[in-house]
Amino acid sequence: MSLLWLPFFMGPRILILIPAIILAVYAQYKVRSTYTRYSRVRTASGITAAQAAQRILTGAGINDAQIQGIRGVLSDHYDPRSKVLRLSNPHSASVAAVGVAAHEAGHAIQHAHGYKPLILRSTVVPVANIGSQLAFPLFFLGLIFRYEPLITVGIFAFSAAVLFTLITLPVEFDASRRAIVALRDGGLVSTEELGEVKEVLFAAALTYVAAAAMAALQLLLLLSLGRRR
Image (cartoon, rainbow, N blue to C red):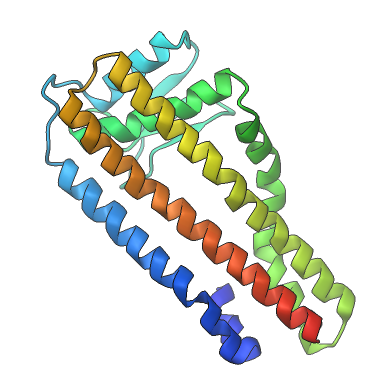
């Protein structure tokens, strides 16, 4: 929704978003194509996503986290409030499903160990959600009515959303690192399969990088336009 508003106020400045848009499109293509490719590759051991996640959790001494199925494609996530890993393909023995499940188990390990960036991200979530919803309406109303306080509030609100995307990067990278280590040390996948898991997780990480880049450039545009006004 925010991008639809921008051309009317930014003019040629909107072109600064082109690199982020290209990166976002490429990231979506990369994660979909990579996930689809390795969804067809079965692990040699036949271990399923749910089994891999459970072994990783058990190996980390985590006994109070549950594993549940969830509908959707790439809808996998870890809910720290209820301590539940929700996997879209829990019974799949594909390299892609196992890699994603291991990544979510990595988040559970972060939570259990009190990983500070994860705690910070969870703290910022409510503010970021409100900020992302209100930032652009407030900002553009401020421009329309030439009311500087609204412009300022809009910028600060969107800054919270940008902060969330930036904090997300180390959280996601660390979860993938933990996943790779757990899969390797636990002997859950072969050396070749580990390389394929890395491809899946790298492709997924690109989507977070693209989101952070887009958010940062949008904030830069708001600051530029706000200063000019």
